[in-house]
Image 1 (spheres, protein in one colour):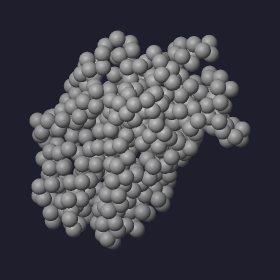
Image 2 (tube, rainbow, N blue to C red):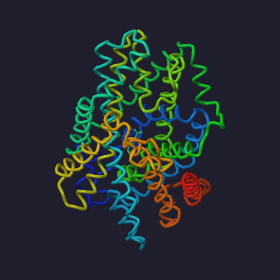
Image 3 (cartoon, rainbow, N blue to C red):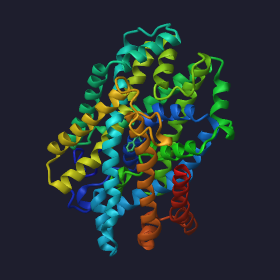
Image 4 (cartoon, helix red, strand yellow):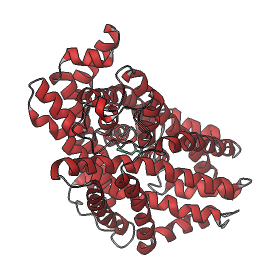
Length: 470
Ligand code: PHE
C-alpha cells in the first residue's frame, strides 16, 4: 500500500495526525487495489458458490445482486466518506466527527462492532485459508490427475478428518497474516495485489473455459441466472444480505479505515462502484466455473462449505496442464484470502494500539493468538465436534456447529448490524453539508444516495432481521 510520502509509510501508528500528516493513497488506483484486496477473497470464490448452491440458485443470486446495488454500494460510500471526513482510524474518525459536529460519542460503537466481527471472522477465515494452502500441495503433486468425483471427495474428507493437519495449515495462514500486520508496512502489498488479482481473474476465466467444455454450462447458467422464487426462503434472503456485507468487507469499518487515506479530490462514488463491480464479477465467474462441474459430475449444489474443494480439483484433474493451473489457482486463492485476512486483523490491532497503548508487534501477537486459538473450535467442528450443536435448542440454529454459528453470527448478524449503524449515522446524524462536500455528487445523485442510507437500508436490514426472528 504505498502512500504519497514514501513507499513504506505505515498507515497505522500515526493515529494522532490529520489526513495530511498520515499520507494519502498514491492514487485512486491504489485505493481501489487495496479495497479490492480486502473485498475479493474467500467470500467470492469459496463462500458465494456454496451459499448459492445451498439456497437454490437464481432467486438467491438476484436478491444478492440487489443487496449489493441497493445496500452494499451506498454503505460502502458512507463508510469511505466517514473515514475520509474523520481522517483517522475508525474509532478516532467517529470521535473526531462527533466532537467536531457536537454529536453523541456513542457512535464509536461502530468501531467496536468491527473489532468483534474481525476477531470472530478471522478465526474461521484462517481455517479455510488453510484448506487453500493444503490444496496447493494436493494439486502440485499431480495426485488429482484423472480422479473420479468420489476420489476427490475422499481427499477432501481426509483433510477434514485430521485436526492436526488442519491446525498446521491454519497456523501457517495466521502467521502469514500476522507478519504483514505486525510490520505495519504495506509497501509491496499494493504491487502484489495489482498483479495477483488480475492473474486470479485470468485463471478463473481458464476454469470457466474448461467448464464450457463439460456440456453443462447452459444448465449452470440457468441455475445461477433464472430465478425460481419457490426456492427462496426468508433465511435465504438474510444470507444474501449478510453475504453482500461479507463479500464487500462492509459493516466492520474496514472501508472506513481505508477511506481515511483517500485524497479529497477523488470520487467516492466512482471508486466504491468500481470495487463492488470487480468483487461481484469475481463471484459470478466463480459460480460459472464451479456449477458446470457440479452438474457434469452429478454432485450436490448444496454440498456446503466443501463445494469448491470437491469440484475445482476435479476440473484440474481433467483439463490439460491441470496440475499447473490448479497449483496456480490455489496459490492465487491464498493471496486473495491473505489480503482479506490482513484487513480483518488490522482494525483490531489499531484498536489495541489506540485503546490499550500497546505497540504494534505486541498487539498483533496478542490479537493473532486469540484468533488462532478461537480457530481451533472451528477446526474441531469439522471432525471431533461435528455433532455438537451448542445452540440446537433455537430452531433456526439447529444442527449448526460452532463453525457454522461463527459464520452465521458474523455475516448475517454482526456485519448487517454494523452496516445499519453506519447508515443511521450517515442518514440521520452527520451534517448534510459535510456529506455533500465529501461525496461531491450532483444534487439528484446525492438525494438518491441520501434517501437510500436514510430510509431504504435501515428498513431493509430491519425487515430482514425481524422476519427471521419471527
Ligand atoms: N470480503 C472478504 C471476502 O470476501 C472477507 C472480509 C469480510 C474481509 C469483512 C474484511 C472484512 O473474502
